[in-house]
Every structure is written in structure tokens, then in C-alpha cells.
Length: 366
Image 1: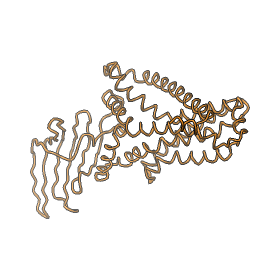
Image 2 (image 1 turned 135 degrees about the horizontal axis):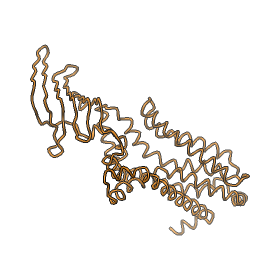
Image 3 (image 1 turned 90 degrees about the horizontal axis):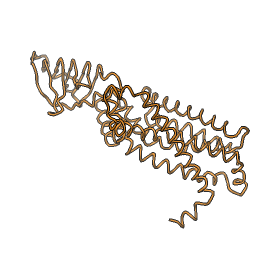
Image 4 (image 1 turned 180 degrees about the vertical axis):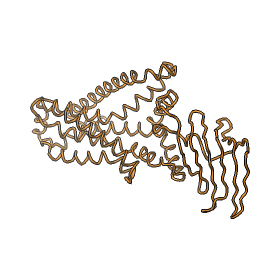
């Protein structure tokens, strides 16, 4: 291993890698510290009004909050760190001797992409395995401490299987109770059975639903039979309280296996959340590639020495960070509310900024 490093990793590489990772880690911790301070001030009322213990706040909420935002901000902090130390190197006339010493610009980029690869590997692992677990701690805390406001979902249509459809006029996530419940069973396109209940509630111990004040209508061609005013009945359905979750953040707390399972279930039920789950799945794979894309842009715009020092490259970097966030949010909206496939929506920011990076690389001084 040492022979490999001595052969392929030169003094220049170590110099750039140390600057890259050192600046990145230092800047990331500063941003995370500021984020935690602002978040505490914003949600202090929630903590106090729901009597959250210091243990729960520290080891549940912030144990999920900090990894989530480290992973979310890492490509953008990476971008600013690259611009900062590269512009500083250019301002101190360190890059000109490197390129004048028969080293190509592509050779100069090598340690940058080695560092970006390390960040990519950590980010990909976190996206696929760590963040869903820590997000579950954070989401559970948020949903039980009033972070998400209204917990009632209205006019829910679900498809349980190829012949069973369910409608609930309103559902309360707190009591796990639905109101004005309707279940219809079809044989092809013919209605065979219709159950109507004033309310339906879930018993987590029995793993069953309780229908209250319900009636059943049986249909056999022109013959119909109606049974009314049945006070109560326990029944098992392929329906769970999680199917009525109102919080969008619930998908970020699912493991990859759970997410794939829910995607397959949603393809049958068609409750309108399929694109959100597919977007979340593909984003976990594609978002870490931003490390390469933004590193390429950062080196290209900051490797030239300019008047005024590092202020101009940093200003451009902040503008591009803002632009990346805007494109990322628009991609989510297009993927969910338009005909854009979720995989293309998740890839759109990196694709657009990748094209920009290639253009800036072509124009960079060599």
C-alpha cells in the first residue's frame, strides 16, 4: 500500500488533498454549528411545550438532524471549500508554477477528484444506509412533538388489490381513526360488495381494524341485499396507519428495502405518492455525484488569479450554490407534478451543472 501511494500520490497530491479535506471539514463544522444554533432558537417552544427531555433532544432529534444536514450540505460546502483554497492558491501564485512545471491541468485536477471520491463514497454510504436510520429518529421526534402541524388527511382513495378499493373522507393520525369509510369489492368491472361505516379505527395490539356503525350491500346482478345498523366488527385488511401518513418526511426515514417495498405496493394502490418515493430512491443514488460536478466547477472558476483576491470567486460560488439549490427544488416539483420521470428529475441538477462544469473546464487557463 505504501509503495502504491509513493508511486502514484506525489507531494503535490498530498498538498492539495490536505488543503481540500481540511478546508472542507472545518467549513462543514462551522455551518453545522450555526444550523444547530438557529434550529434550537426556532424549535425551543416545541421542546418546552411538549416537555421533551434533554436526552431526547440530543440523542433523538439532533442525532438525526446533524447527520441529515451534514449529508445535505456536504456537496455545497465542498464546492465553497474548493473555491476558497484554490482561489487562495491562485492569489499566492502557487498554481502558475505547477502548470509551468510540465504538469497538465488534468494532472492538477487529480488530487481534487481523489478527495471528491472520498467524499462521494462517504456520502453514498450515508444516503443508502446511515441517513435513513438517523432520519427515523428525527422524523419520529418531529411527528410526536408538533413539528408538522395538522395531522389529519382528507379524502383518501386507496387500491388494496386488483379488486378492492377503499375511500376514507378524513383520517386522524393521532387516534388512527378514519371517518366515513367505504370499501368496494369488484369482479372485473361489476360491483359485488360495498361496506360503509361511520368510522374505522386501528387496534395496534390486535393488528385489526374496528368498523363502527356500518352496513353491507351485496350485489349479484339485479339482486341486491342490504344489511344495516351493525354496531361493530373487527376485521383484517391489507391497510395500515402508515398508508395514511401525512408527513412527506416519512419517506426519508425509510431504509432502501422499505422504500422499494412501498414503491411496489404504491404501484398497485395508486394513492398518489409513487413519484415522491421513486424520486427519494433515485436521489439517494445520484445526489452524491454532486461532489464531482461541483468540484469541477469550483476548480475551473477559481484557478485563475484575479484582481481583488478571493472575493470574486467566492461571490460566484455563493451564487452558483443558490442556483443549484433552486434547480434541485424545481427538479423535485417537476418530477412529482409533471410528466418528468423521477430518475430524470433526480439527475437534472447534476446534469445541468455537469454541462456547465465541462464548459468552464474548457475555458479554464491551462
